[in-house]
Image (tube, rainbow, N blue to C red; front, top):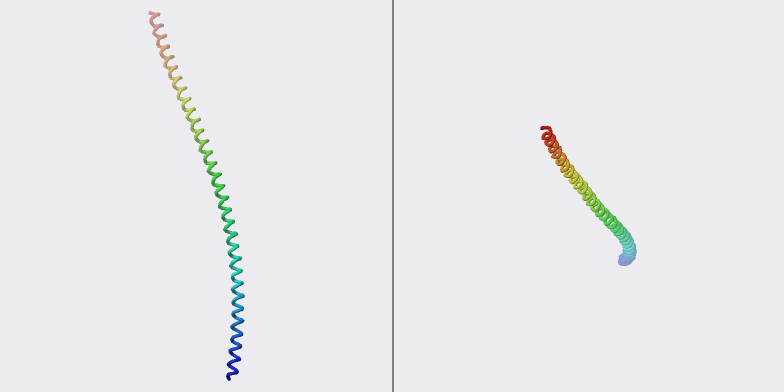
Length: 117
């Protein structure tokens, strides 16, 4: 009986050693897989950083385009104001001349009326 128990213990010891060896192999394999996954995540992270940098470049370009449009809008506003001022001064000149012509017509009419009498 003792011999049988000893055989069983030796067999159990052998199986435990095999399990330990398998566990060490699995641990090593899992470690390698985690390293591979970590490398892949690092690669993805680097790619996202590159994409983020490219978006920042595009954003800067849009900002410069916005600034150009703002400059153009300001210039167009000035041109519009110049047209308004020119039109206003032209209207004032026309009104001034119209008033002068009307006064001259009145004076001519009065002079003609006086000369007929």
